[in-house]
Length: 309
Ligand SMILES: [Zn+2]
Image (cartoon, rainbow, N blue to C red; front, top):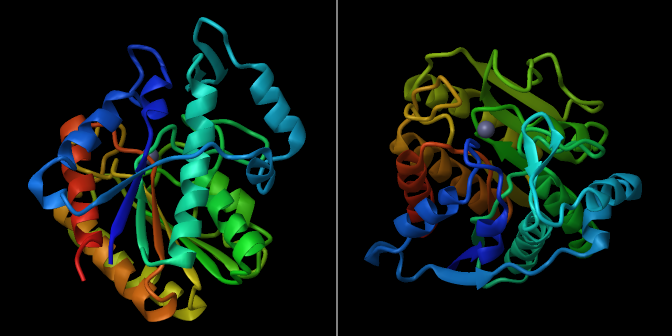
């Protein structure tokens, strides 16, 4: 069963400025880590451009038009406190969404059942009408709605192990009875949402917060005691992973202490759930991860696990 990695050079042309942690070198670090012999069977696919219809699955026309009208010709602009646009951003953002949509199409038709989208900018902070936290469009949410609209998929789970809470995905899923958003994240931390009391209109949101300083032991425990039972309860037809690697102990933006093995462990549990409920269909979408060495090693551990079994 081939595992796909969707990528595109456009991810390298989204310039955020020399000081910014969400930078093109992240993709170079990932591609370098995935260039060893262990990944020679990983199939690389180029990300297509998303269509307007894909964006509209989550984002209203007025937001898309506003963002598009901000496209700079020759400079950097901020569309939010820390969310930048450069001349290359629009294409990068459209291809990041296009990758997530293609990933859904691929796992639905097979033979590939597991896909990793190695794209930037990330997406889980993007709310339907608001760019924030380095994110413009919400790839994970768009992937879920695309699965419903195009493939008739009823139950979708997005599991998000980025160190930050995915406020955008939560907002997009809030009223969706058959879509579950389950997140592990550090609290307190940006963006400030993700309290366990935030549960969605249909009890379809699960937020499990970890205190600063928590490590693999605590992370594995909440995965086993909360995230997995949530998936057992939903029995998702498709599993989407918001794969952020900034809960790594070396990451400069978070204060959790995970190591590569912890990401591999979570990946294995998620694969077991996908095998159990969704014929193995698992779409993994890169979110955060800002220490280049830790990011490369963590993605390698994640993808290596996806290639097993
Ligand atoms: Zn993050």
